[in-house]
Image (cartoon, rainbow, N blue to C red; front, side):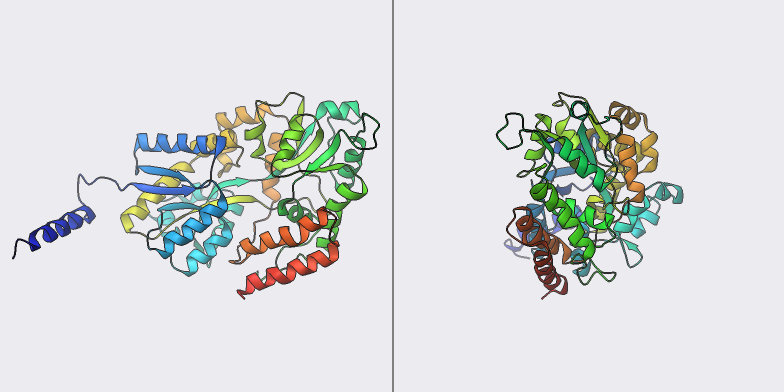
Length: 424
C-alpha cells in the first residue's frame, strides 16, 4: 500500500463505520421540508423542538420553503439530484408523481410494524385522511395540515341589518340574501362602503360550490376533467352573481379579504379553519363562526397536505416514521390544531383538554369542524395540481373580473386541464 492510498482508505473506513449500525450509534439527523410560515411555522418549530428535546428518534431539522410552489420545485430538483429530504409536505397530486418514480417509501409496513400503530390507534384517525394517502392498497402519505372551510361573520353587523346573529345563512340563497342586506352605501355616492361578503380569486371557493351542486372536479378515473358541467356552470355563475349582479361582494387580492373583514368593511367571509390563527387577537367585534352555507349537498373538499417519507436508508426511514407517529398522536395533534386551526388528525383529540379549551373560545367552531365528517377528499391525479391552477387562471379569474363568459371559460379551462391530466 502506498502512502498516497492511505488517506483514501481512511476516508472510506470512516464512511463505512458511520453507515453501520450498532450500540451507541447517534440517531440520524432528519430534514423536514415544508411551507409553513407565520404563526403556523412558529407552532411547527415549537413542536419540532419538543420532539428533539425528547429525542425518541430525531433530531429533526425544520426547513421552511415559504410557499408551496417553491416546495414542489425544490422537492423535484432534490429527487432528480439524488438528495431528497427525509420528510416533506406533499399534496396528493405530488405524491402520485413521487410514487411513480420510486422516490417515497410505503408507510404501510411501518404502520403495521413493531413501532407502528395498533388497529385501535389507526381507527382513531379520520378515515378520509387515510383514504387520501392510500393508493393501490398501500398508505404512501400521512395527514399533516388538513383544514375545512367555514363561514366567519360579524354578529354586530348582522344585528344592525336586522338579521339574527344566531341564525347565520345555511343555504346559498340565504347567503346571497344576507350579503345583499349587509351591503351598505353610507355616503350616498352610489358605491358600497360596507360589503356583505368578500372573495379571493381562488379555485377553492369554486370547487366547494361545485361539489355542493352535485358536481365533481374530475371523472371517476381521474384521467379527465368533469367541472365543465351544468353543476360547474351553476357554481361559477353564483360566484359571479355576488360580484356583478348583486354588487354585494368585494373582490380582493390575496388575503386582503381577511383585513377587510377585521376592519368591519365586510360582514361575512368564507375562510379556512386556519384563518383563525391569523385573525385572533385582532378581532374588535362579536365574531360568529358557522358551517358553509349548503347547496343541494352539504359537503366540501378537505384542504391541506400530507407528509411523505423519502427512500434513503432503512434507519432514516424508520426515524422519519417515528417523528410522524409522535407528531400525530392525540396530545400533539390537539396542540397543533389549537395553535393553528388545522383539523386534528385523530377523533380522540377533539376530547383533549387543549382542544376543548380552544373550541370553547369560539361559538360555532365545533360545529364547523364537524363538517369534516361529511367532506370529500381532493383528487390525487398526478396532473391535477397543474390542472387546478389552470381552472383558476383560465376560468375563475377572467369570469370574476367580468372579461369572460362562464360557459366559454369553463370549456377552455377543461380542455387545457385535460392536456395536463393526459400528460400531453
